[in-house]
Length: 249
Image (tube, rainbow, N blue to C red):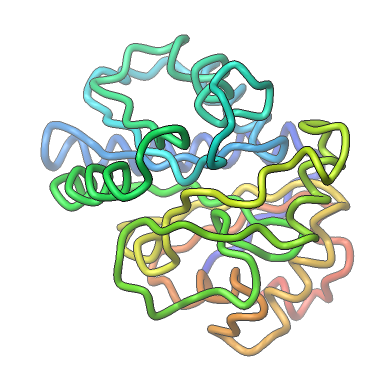
Protein backbone atom coordinates (compact mmCIF):
# COMPACT_ATOMS: atom_id res chain seq x y z
CA UNK A 1 0.00 0.00 0.00
CA UNK A 2 1.19 3.48 -0.87
CA UNK A 3 -0.43 6.55 0.70
CA UNK A 4 -0.13 9.94 -1.01
CA UNK A 5 -1.40 13.04 0.82
CA UNK A 6 -2.04 16.21 -1.18
CA UNK A 7 -2.87 19.68 0.08
CA UNK A 8 -6.15 20.13 -1.82
CA UNK A 9 -8.78 17.99 -3.58
CA UNK A 10 -7.60 19.42 -6.89
CA UNK A 11 -4.01 18.40 -6.20
CA UNK A 12 -5.25 14.97 -5.14
CA UNK A 13 -7.21 14.58 -8.38
CA UNK A 14 -4.19 15.50 -10.47
CA UNK A 15 -1.93 13.08 -8.63
CA UNK A 16 -4.45 10.23 -8.85
CA UNK A 17 -5.08 10.91 -12.54
CA UNK A 18 -1.38 10.77 -13.33
CA UNK A 19 -1.11 7.39 -11.61
CA UNK A 20 -4.20 6.04 -13.38
CA UNK A 21 -2.95 7.09 -16.81
CA UNK A 22 0.51 5.68 -16.12
CA UNK A 23 -0.92 2.29 -15.19
CA UNK A 24 -3.32 2.26 -18.15
CA UNK A 25 -0.43 3.15 -20.46
CA UNK A 26 1.58 0.23 -19.10
CA UNK A 27 -1.28 -2.16 -19.85
CA UNK A 28 -1.67 -0.74 -23.37
CA UNK A 29 2.06 -1.06 -23.99
CA UNK A 30 1.90 -4.69 -22.82
CA UNK A 31 -1.29 -5.88 -24.56
CA UNK A 32 -2.42 -3.10 -26.89
CA UNK A 33 -5.49 -2.35 -24.75
CA UNK A 34 -6.57 -1.76 -21.16
CA UNK A 35 -9.59 -2.42 -18.97
CA UNK A 36 -10.56 0.31 -16.55
CA UNK A 37 -13.00 0.24 -13.61
CA UNK A 38 -14.39 3.54 -12.35
CA UNK A 39 -16.18 4.88 -9.28
CA UNK A 40 -18.68 7.71 -9.15
CA UNK A 41 -19.84 10.18 -6.49
CA UNK A 42 -18.75 13.65 -5.46
CA UNK A 43 -15.36 12.40 -4.27
CA UNK A 44 -14.37 11.57 -7.85
CA UNK A 45 -15.08 14.97 -9.42
CA UNK A 46 -11.50 16.25 -9.28
CA UNK A 47 -10.01 13.02 -10.57
CA UNK A 48 -12.32 12.95 -13.59
CA UNK A 49 -11.60 16.63 -14.27
CA UNK A 50 -7.86 15.96 -14.15
CA UNK A 51 -8.14 12.93 -16.44
CA UNK A 52 -9.97 15.00 -19.04
CA UNK A 53 -7.25 17.65 -19.01
CA UNK A 54 -4.59 15.12 -19.98
CA UNK A 55 -3.69 14.23 -23.56
CA UNK A 56 -4.48 10.51 -23.60
CA UNK A 57 -5.75 8.10 -26.26
CA UNK A 58 -8.81 6.47 -24.68
CA UNK A 59 -9.68 4.48 -27.81
CA UNK A 60 -7.87 1.40 -26.49
CA UNK A 61 -9.63 1.45 -23.13
CA UNK A 62 -12.74 -0.48 -22.11
CA UNK A 63 -14.50 1.04 -19.12
CA UNK A 64 -16.54 -0.83 -16.52
CA UNK A 65 -18.24 0.71 -13.51
CA UNK A 66 -18.91 -0.49 -10.01
CA UNK A 67 -22.56 -0.14 -9.15
CA UNK A 68 -25.97 1.32 -9.82
CA UNK A 69 -29.17 1.86 -7.88
CA UNK A 70 -31.95 -0.63 -8.54
CA UNK A 71 -34.98 0.99 -10.16
CA UNK A 72 -33.54 4.50 -10.61
CA UNK A 73 -34.11 5.89 -14.11
CA UNK A 74 -31.10 7.09 -16.10
CA UNK A 75 -32.71 10.53 -16.24
CA UNK A 76 -32.42 10.95 -12.45
CA UNK A 77 -29.54 13.20 -11.39
CA UNK A 78 -28.24 10.49 -9.03
CA UNK A 79 -28.03 7.82 -11.74
CA UNK A 80 -24.43 6.66 -11.97
CA UNK A 81 -24.82 5.90 -15.65
CA UNK A 82 -25.93 9.50 -16.21
CA UNK A 83 -23.02 10.72 -14.04
CA UNK A 84 -20.51 8.79 -16.13
CA UNK A 85 -21.96 9.84 -19.46
CA UNK A 86 -21.97 13.52 -18.51
CA UNK A 87 -18.60 13.58 -16.78
CA UNK A 88 -16.59 11.07 -18.77
CA UNK A 89 -17.83 8.73 -21.48
CA UNK A 90 -19.49 11.40 -23.66
CA UNK A 91 -16.30 13.47 -23.51
CA UNK A 92 -13.72 10.87 -24.54
CA UNK A 93 -13.54 8.23 -27.27
CA UNK A 94 -13.47 4.91 -25.42
CA UNK A 95 -13.09 1.53 -27.07
CA UNK A 96 -16.21 0.51 -25.14
CA UNK A 97 -18.20 1.51 -22.06
CA UNK A 98 -19.91 -1.19 -20.00
CA UNK A 99 -22.59 0.23 -17.72
CA UNK A 100 -24.45 -1.39 -14.85
CA UNK A 101 -28.16 -1.44 -15.71
CA UNK A 102 -30.24 -0.93 -12.58
CA UNK A 103 -33.53 -1.13 -14.48
CA UNK A 104 -33.17 -4.49 -16.24
CA UNK A 105 -33.78 -7.98 -14.94
CA UNK A 106 -31.25 -8.22 -12.10
CA UNK A 107 -30.24 -11.83 -12.72
CA UNK A 108 -29.72 -11.21 -16.43
CA UNK A 109 -27.80 -7.99 -15.77
CA UNK A 110 -25.47 -9.69 -13.31
CA UNK A 111 -24.94 -12.67 -15.62
CA UNK A 112 -24.02 -10.40 -18.53
CA UNK A 113 -21.69 -8.23 -16.46
CA UNK A 114 -20.02 -11.27 -14.93
CA UNK A 115 -19.32 -12.84 -18.32
CA UNK A 116 -18.00 -9.57 -19.73
CA UNK A 117 -15.65 -8.77 -16.87
CA UNK A 118 -14.35 -12.36 -16.75
CA UNK A 119 -13.28 -11.92 -20.37
CA UNK A 120 -11.76 -8.50 -19.65
CA UNK A 121 -9.79 -8.59 -16.37
CA UNK A 122 -9.43 -5.12 -14.91
CA UNK A 123 -6.03 -3.47 -15.17
CA UNK A 124 -6.82 -0.37 -13.11
CA UNK A 125 -9.69 -0.12 -10.65
CA UNK A 126 -10.56 3.29 -9.21
CA UNK A 127 -12.32 2.53 -5.94
CA UNK A 128 -13.88 5.24 -3.80
CA UNK A 129 -14.37 4.80 -0.06
CA UNK A 130 -17.66 5.77 1.54
CA UNK A 131 -18.29 7.60 4.80
CA UNK A 132 -19.10 4.23 6.36
CA UNK A 133 -15.92 2.81 4.75
CA UNK A 134 -17.87 0.91 2.11
CA UNK A 135 -16.26 -0.08 -1.18
CA UNK A 136 -18.68 0.03 -4.10
CA UNK A 137 -22.03 -0.45 -2.33
CA UNK A 138 -20.70 -3.10 0.03
CA UNK A 139 -21.78 -1.60 3.34
CA UNK A 140 -20.70 -3.08 6.67
CA UNK A 141 -20.74 -5.92 7.41
CA UNK A 142 -19.41 -6.61 3.92
CA UNK A 143 -19.39 -10.08 2.43
CA UNK A 144 -15.74 -10.81 1.71
CA UNK A 145 -16.40 -14.44 0.71
CA UNK A 146 -18.80 -14.06 -2.22
CA UNK A 147 -16.88 -15.20 -5.31
CA UNK A 148 -19.41 -13.70 -7.73
CA UNK A 149 -18.52 -10.59 -9.73
CA UNK A 150 -21.67 -8.60 -8.95
CA UNK A 151 -24.55 -9.01 -6.52
CA UNK A 152 -27.64 -7.21 -5.22
CA UNK A 153 -27.08 -5.38 -1.93
CA UNK A 154 -29.24 -3.53 0.58
CA UNK A 155 -28.01 0.00 1.35
CA UNK A 156 -27.61 0.83 5.02
CA UNK A 157 -28.75 4.05 6.69
CA UNK A 158 -25.30 5.63 6.74
CA UNK A 159 -24.80 5.02 3.05
CA UNK A 160 -28.18 6.52 2.19
CA UNK A 161 -27.51 9.56 4.38
CA UNK A 162 -24.25 10.11 2.51
CA UNK A 163 -26.13 10.30 -0.79
CA UNK A 164 -28.39 12.97 0.69
CA UNK A 165 -25.43 14.84 2.18
CA UNK A 166 -23.75 14.97 -1.23
CA UNK A 167 -26.90 16.48 -2.71
CA UNK A 168 -28.03 13.62 -4.95
CA UNK A 169 -31.38 13.17 -3.16
CA UNK A 170 -33.66 15.46 -1.15
CA UNK A 171 -34.20 12.98 1.71
CA UNK A 172 -33.15 9.53 2.90
CA UNK A 173 -36.59 8.25 1.91
CA UNK A 174 -35.84 9.18 -1.70
CA UNK A 175 -32.67 7.05 -1.86
CA UNK A 176 -33.25 3.59 -3.33
CA UNK A 177 -32.83 0.79 -0.82
CA UNK A 178 -31.06 -1.64 -3.15
CA UNK A 179 -28.29 -1.57 -5.71
CA UNK A 180 -26.36 -3.79 -8.10
CA UNK A 181 -22.79 -3.71 -6.81
CA UNK A 182 -19.47 -5.28 -7.65
CA UNK A 183 -18.41 -7.65 -4.88
CA UNK A 184 -15.31 -7.10 -2.73
CA UNK A 185 -13.74 -10.26 -4.17
CA UNK A 186 -14.13 -8.92 -7.71
CA UNK A 187 -12.67 -5.55 -6.71
CA UNK A 188 -9.62 -7.35 -5.36
CA UNK A 189 -9.11 -9.05 -8.74
CA UNK A 190 -8.05 -5.69 -10.24
CA UNK A 191 -4.38 -5.68 -11.19
CA UNK A 192 -3.96 -2.23 -9.62
CA UNK A 193 -6.29 -0.26 -7.34
CA UNK A 194 -6.27 3.54 -7.02
CA UNK A 195 -8.48 5.17 -4.36
CA UNK A 196 -8.96 8.96 -4.52
CA UNK A 197 -10.59 9.95 -1.20
CA UNK A 198 -10.76 13.71 -0.55
CA UNK A 199 -12.65 15.71 2.07
CA UNK A 200 -13.28 15.94 5.78
CA UNK A 201 -16.47 13.87 5.41
CA UNK A 202 -14.23 10.86 4.76
CA UNK A 203 -11.79 11.43 7.64
CA UNK A 204 -13.47 9.02 10.06
CA UNK A 205 -13.62 6.31 7.43
CA UNK A 206 -9.94 6.72 6.56
CA UNK A 207 -8.91 6.59 10.21
CA UNK A 208 -10.99 3.43 10.68
CA UNK A 209 -9.59 1.89 7.52
CA UNK A 210 -5.99 2.45 8.58
CA UNK A 211 -6.41 1.58 12.27
CA UNK A 212 -8.72 -1.46 12.18
CA UNK A 213 -7.47 -4.98 11.71
CA UNK A 214 -6.98 -5.89 8.07
CA UNK A 215 -9.98 -7.55 6.41
CA UNK A 216 -12.52 -6.34 8.96
CA UNK A 217 -15.96 -6.66 7.31
CA UNK A 218 -17.28 -3.92 9.60
CA UNK A 219 -14.75 -1.60 7.89
CA UNK A 220 -14.95 -2.87 4.30
CA UNK A 221 -12.14 -0.66 2.99
CA UNK A 222 -9.63 -2.55 5.15
CA UNK A 223 -9.69 -5.25 2.50
CA UNK A 224 -7.92 -2.89 0.08
CA UNK A 225 -4.90 -2.78 2.39
CA UNK A 226 -4.16 -6.41 1.50
CA UNK A 227 -3.99 -5.74 -2.24
CA UNK A 228 -0.43 -6.00 -3.66
CA UNK A 229 -0.76 -2.82 -5.75
CA UNK A 230 -2.96 -0.36 -3.85
CA UNK A 231 -2.55 3.44 -3.98
CA UNK A 232 -4.53 5.58 -1.52
CA UNK A 233 -4.81 9.27 -2.40
CA UNK A 234 -5.85 11.60 0.43
CA UNK A 235 -5.94 15.34 0.99
CA UNK A 236 -5.15 17.11 4.25
CA UNK A 237 -8.83 16.98 5.25
CA UNK A 238 -9.44 13.27 4.65
CA UNK A 239 -6.11 12.47 6.35
CA UNK A 240 -6.80 14.90 9.19
CA UNK A 241 -7.66 12.31 11.86
CA UNK A 242 -4.71 10.04 11.09
CA UNK A 243 -1.40 10.03 12.92
CA UNK A 244 1.83 10.29 10.99
CA UNK A 245 2.52 6.65 11.83
CA UNK A 246 -0.80 5.57 10.26
CA UNK A 247 0.11 7.41 7.07
CA UNK A 248 3.44 5.56 6.81
CA UNK A 249 2.36 1.93 6.33
